[in-house]
Amino acid sequence: MIRRWARDPLFHFLVAGALLFALFAWRGEEADPESRTIAVNREVQASLALQFEAMMQRPPTDAELDGLIERWLRDEVLYREALRLGLDREDAVVRRRLAKKMDALASAQAETAQPSEAELREWLAANPERFARGATISFDQLYFAEEAAARSALSRLRDNAGWERLGEPLSIPASQERASMRLVTDRYGRQFTAAVEKMEAGDNWQGPVPSGFGWHLVRLQSREQGKIPPLAEIRQRVEDDWRGATMSARTQAAYQVLRDAYRVEIAE
Image 1: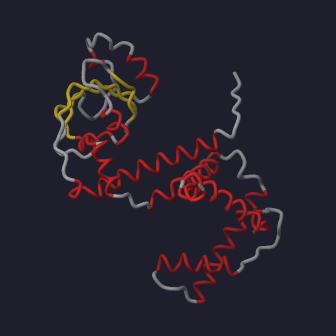
Image 2 (image 1 turned 90 degrees about the vertical axis):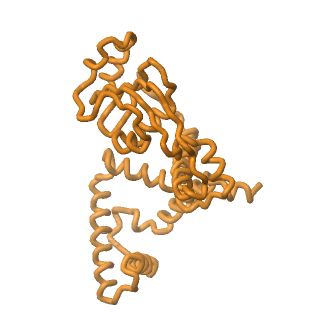
């Protein structure tokens, strides 16, 4: 049982969080904005030297290490003074960055994970539309800058009459005939493509669907399946896609573990 837990990414996420907490507790003087003592111990110096070596492919000279320490001290002093002034509180930017760091902890293992041949074959079989060559779709789209406007327009598209007049101006055509999935992704973005891939072809308008421009209502007219290459030819693409999806899934699963520990009260 213990060995199985040790392989679980959620286990590593929670352990990493505990280690971070322990690190701050052990180096309490650095986390305490009231402290006027800054200890540049050997661990700090070694970390600075290793970061320099990783970037420059050589160890720093004594003079360069002195410069690294001075820059580290400057950041530490300003960091403590920012804490002293309470600049970390009610700051949306700081809040979001800390949340992203927690997400990074959860997905870190997936970044270096090596899937087996069987896992890649299973992934390719489960997501053929992502790798098919020559796959095309034909669709109509209406663009809106705001999601609310798109939802409002959707209710007026039931009879499909005069649909071209409902959208807002956009530099790309309202209709796409036999567009490749690569073209759709390049033009509209991954979120748009992923949403359209899940749609059923027909006369119904669907959405709103997000893109790099804003929001769209989409009527998928037809889909033509392409040919799926052998895994050996597209192995790296399949692995990258698997890794991205795995990172996203592990991040969400780790968040859910933490989320379930809270009771949320939303005022009405």
